[in-house]
Length: 180
Image 1 (tube, one colour):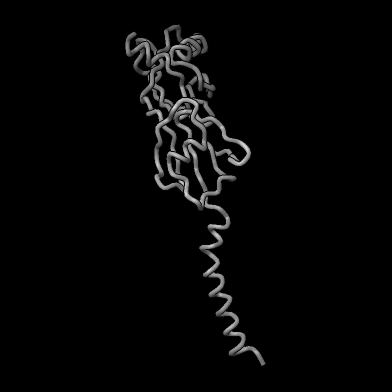
Image 2 (tube, rainbow, N blue to C red; image 1 turned 180 degrees about the horizontal axis):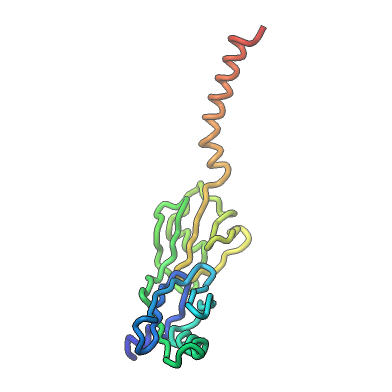
């Protein structure tokens, strides 16, 4: 099995950058990113949902859609092959990329990144969607992004001393200058 065959059989995912070329016409070649909503923009065609397609199947689709404009084959390749990882940020000991393993869940990724006791696991963000890990534990895909916020009580513990000192100062001012 050749490396070219392996790359052309990889499914397109969000975050990929695609190189699109029209066979024999350099002026029609361009790059396009795959956005978070799984779409990519193609001149003369517009936005297409491309996640899950292979470069070969997208090439065939674009060739058909662009046939009214020019009757040349379209070739789609990856500009970058992203590492198989999941990004974990926020209230974790080791923020950054964790190695993706097939079947991995959000809880697995948080375990690998070292979720901190101050993490709010009921309000985790998975690719911009709120996930409550006490009720669901979705499976991940390579390239997913997890953001773990600080819990309300952990934030309150940081703010409470400031509020208390302000309150104490207010009581002192009241008792010293305003109380009659």
